[in-house]
Image 1 (cartoon, helix red, strand yellow):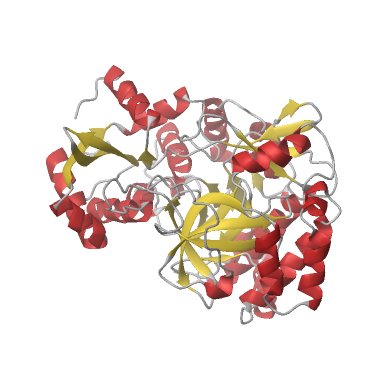
Image 2 (image 1 turned 90 degrees about the vertical axis):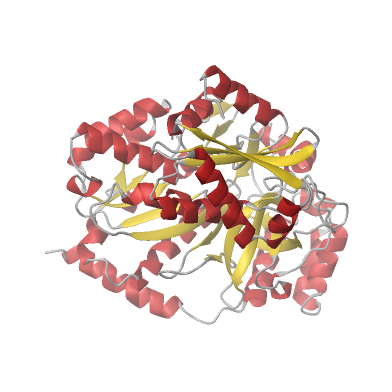
Length: 518
């Protein structure tokens, strides 16, 4: 009898009832802001940008006075500006730079669109904040009434980067997933898989092999990670033990906690590996912090974490604030959470307990429910296509691929799109990663039709300036082989949905060597 599971489930439900209340987003963010600037006022950054004045403003000023002063005193920073002026000093071991104390951990964050690694500070305060938000997310499971009590006694497989971090002087660097896994609370160790030894493995292929060999001995109830890598792992396990689906190995698997990319394009292929339905919980955990998570079953969006070490600002993602290449203009319009509108796209600015201040994270979001502060990720500021005004977002692309996959009954493992000029005409070149038989011309036409339905600007430009649309079907393995060639296998790495500039030639050159032709 699942005695511990019943206790945990009842405790989660009782705690969630106490926790659930009407959200006052502005009040929560004002309090968070006060804690952040109060803690950081004696740092080099805080003294340079008059955090004492900001603290007085939030304590004694009008409801919005603190934000007007914040915008006036503190400039917006992208990564390059933040690192060049401040974070490099923390990486060199200096303390009290943008957050009190010396920063021991740095998350290596470099999407496949970036040439060099980014070093994002991960303070003790941030690790605690991430753990606290993780516990809050567990509490939301009270809303999933179909979960049996026994689930809460099962193992949790967290597929992430190596906990064997690299030394850089006095600092340790690695994937955020590796940093957080290396510091899991003692009470969670009995549930945590793959365990400390396998988690230290740096070779991704070897790690997957070791997990596969041990999988038969584990009783897994939860899996956590990026969809593409977990799908690859489950395929390996199913093949290794010659079973029909993963539930023959893990009969109690009930929850998949995913993030990093939209799950919808992966859903059809993923569910082919299951023997029964499971619950899906979406998270927004970036190298800069745990920003949002799904709080209720079937919610359209994730709820922003408004009261745990992150202050949010929102830049309307439009032509007034960003160029056609996704570059932010000088002095863009910025808003607090009470000024946003549902259905509009915004670029995110965050100030955090890791010492990021008015930091452009690079993601774009849309509010689906302002009252609940729920959002969906729509893409990246530089990962969209607007060669001639088509304003095609990653959100549009994901939805089109999902709908066409359902129509054709195929599983699209990966995809990417490049904007190109064909003989003085604008066009898009799609690369679709699937191992299912499909007619490329039919697939191209169906995706084009869906995009015209989803995006009015795209439909207009397809009749005028956007004349060309090409599509290449690519074996799914080549997407992963290309990432492997870049040293970006596993962990939090994702294939870019939009290819620009040098990456287009790099990717096409890789395919040419593999003899993949349009």
